[in-house]
Amino acid sequence: MEKLSNFSRQEKKNFRRINNEIGEVAVAFQLPENIKGKVFQLYLKAKRKNLLKGRDLKTIFAACLGIAVKEQKIPLAIKDITDELDVSFKTTKRLMKIIAQNLQIKILPIEISSFIDKFCADLNLSDKVKSKAEKILRKATEMGLTNRPSPQGTAAGIVYIAALLNHEHRTQKEVSDVAGVTDVTIRSRYKEIAKELNIDALS
Image (cartoon, rainbow, N blue to C red; front, side, top):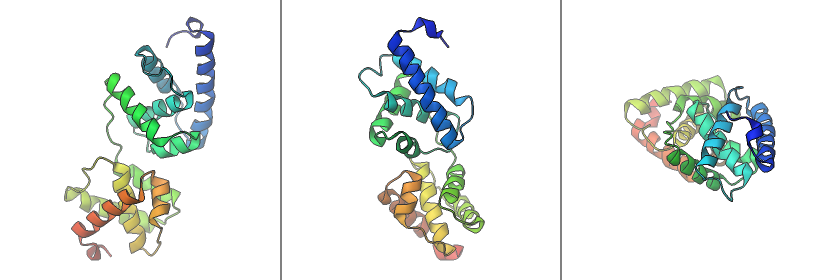
C-alpha cells in the first residue's frame, strides 16, 4: 500500500474515517484482521479509476467492505453492512457493481450453507431446524434448485421451511430482515422449493 505521506490532507482524513469505520464494523461482525487491508486496497484502486468522485464516503466504505467479504467468502449480508452503517442498500449494491466491473473483480457467490448457519443463529432457531435446513439444501441442490442469483434468498427460503416443519415458526418478515432480502424473494423461493421437493416427504 502507498505511504500515507503521499496523499492530500483530505485523503488522509478519509483514510482515518474509513479506519475508524472498519474498526467498529469489524468488532460488530467479528471480521478477520486482514479485512482492513483489503478494504483500503479496493478504495485506492477505485479512486485511481475515478469511480468515487461525488460519492458519500460511508457508502464507498460499505461497497468496498461488501466486495471484500464476498471475495473472502465471509457470510455477511450486504443488508447487514448497510444497516450497520446507515446507508442505502440499493446505492451500495450499485456502487459494488461499478467497482467490481471496473476493477475486473469476479465476485463468486458465498456457499448457501454458510448463510443457513448464520440465519439460524440470528433467528435463535434450534439445531433441529439447522439440521432440517441442511437436509433440504442437499435435496434442493440435487434437483438443481440452488442455481439462483441470490444465495441469501435461497438460504432464507430453506430456513423458513425448516422452521415451519419443526414448529419454530418465524414470519417471512423476520426472516427477510435477517437475510437482507425482500419478503417477495423469500415467498418465491419457499414456494418453489416446497413444491419441487414435495415438502410433506421431509416432515
